[in-house]
Every structure is written in C-alpha cells, then in structure tokens.
Length: 352
Image 1 (cartoon, rainbow, N blue to C red):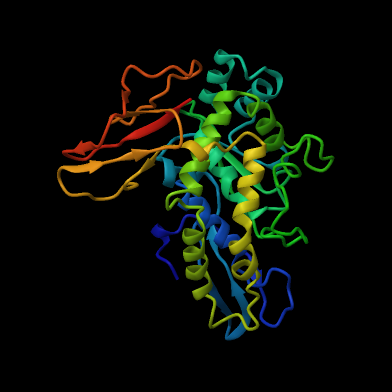
Image 2: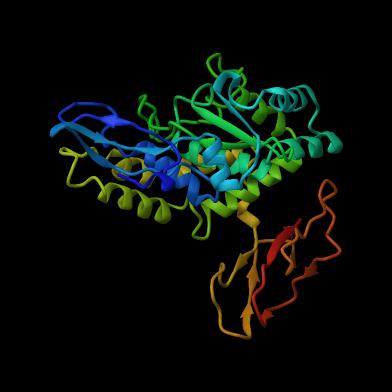
C-alpha cells in the first residue's frame, strides 16, 4: 500500500499466471516507456507486482502511472487547466479547441512557409514530437499511430502540445513484422488505408516536407542513435536486461525474442529507413574526442568530420541560422583543439 499523498493514478496491464499469452515476456510496454524516458521525454513509470486478493493469487500485473491532469502537473508543474487528447480526438481533459486549431494549421498549411512552420512550432513541441516518434519507430509499435496515444498541454499558459507514449505492448514485431519492417513507410505513410488519416501520421507527413523539420529530426536521430545515445544498441540492451531482470523469477519460459533478434538486428534497418526518408544525416556530423561528461581542466577537445568546414558554438546555440542555412554569428570555425576551461555546452555542425 502506498501513502495516499504519493499516488497519482495508475493503469494496469495484466498477464495471468499460466496463460500462454502473446504478450509474454510481459515487459514490452514497460520497456518502450523506459526508452521514451531515456530519450528525455516524460513517460509513465510502472512496476511489476504479484496480486493476491483475500489470499488468492490473481496473477502478475504492471501498474503504471495514468496520463491525466495529475500526471501532467507532476511532470510539467501545477496548472489550473489542462487539455488532454487521446486517439480519435477524444477529450480527456479540457477541450479540443486548441487541438483542432493545431491539426488544421499543420494539415492544411504548406510547412515550407517559415511563418507557418514557426506557428506550428508554437503550438506543438516539435522536439518532443520527434523524441516521441523515435522509440516507437525503433520498436515498431503496431497498434499505433491510429490508436494508443496521448497529447497534452498547459491550457492555462497556452502551452504547446506534447505527446506521451501510451499502451505500446504491441511492439517489437508482435503482429508478425520482422526486424526489417519499415514503420515509416507503413504506420506513418499517407498511402496506408489503416493509418493514413490518423492525426499523428498526417501531422508527421505535413511537417516532414519542411527542410527545418527534416534537419530537426536528423539532429534528434543523431543524438539518440549515435555516440552512446538512448537508442544505441548498448543502451537499449542495458535497459532491456534491467527490465527483464525484474521478471526473471516470475515468468517461466521467458520469450527472449527481443533480446535475441530485435536488438542485434533492428538498428541497421531503422537507420536505412530514416536515411531514405531524408530524416538522418549523421554520416558527416562532427565527431568529438569525447562526447560529454567530465574532463580535466584545460582539456583539448578535438573535432573531426569527413568533408567540409566545422563550425561550433559554446553557448548552446545552433551554429546554423534557421531557414537560411547560413553560419550563425555566434559560431566559430574549427581550426584546432578547443581548450575547455570550465563547464560548456558545445554544439557543432559540418558545412558543405
């Protein structure tokens, strides 16, 4: 029992003992939500429990936080009013006025127009949107995007919508898709009759026409899929092993297909899909002699790339000017090791 003050609200996924259920190994939903958190976005936290009612064993469950107003306030700060939308435009909190305005803007406007793109960015947290998509594309969440999603915003502050992973247990090829399945060309394709009219798919397909969104997506792919990021094989394997360890003594005949097949093979296909869609440009990104972390005072950071000049900033800003591709006035051309005298957030790009 939890003290009442520590409990917000919970949902559960159950796999009863003895059932030959396709959701075995019972960790998929929890695992996908964990990957979303590793990508830097709020995601419901869950646990695994054995349930007894009056001494009678009822199975093992995965209680997790429910995405509601309490969840939004816990992760984004208190607010007197929230909008929370679920699949099909279902209103869970607040109303759909701002949601419908966002849909109409993104789906009915040419996102090549810089003013319209910035207007969309003010209504939808685009970094969150990409970070939300990345783990679901990697995991091939099959009962999505036509179903099983949540989007919320601080209504009182007129904040942007953010997406949250929800109910992702039909992932990692559960519907028979192999590791080579192209989620971008199927679940997120406008040509797909099942998913083509879903809100997430239509928003994605409208936004991806913008070179700015393509570059933002590529930046987040580079962050998550490379250099020790959340969706590199080693990080994914670590998280999988951690979640699996919580079930080792509970689930007999553990189905290890995710660990044995998906994690070793999925990466090359996903990066190929993203590259062919124009959403991955990592081959000539600057490489650092160390990607983050602690270094001794006076550390000389070196950068390398395949071709073109490297420009960098040390104030956390983008070395590139939005929409124009010009070099930012805050950027410096790399000409040799950068000596670090204190904490710094350094960003670099290659110019070709």
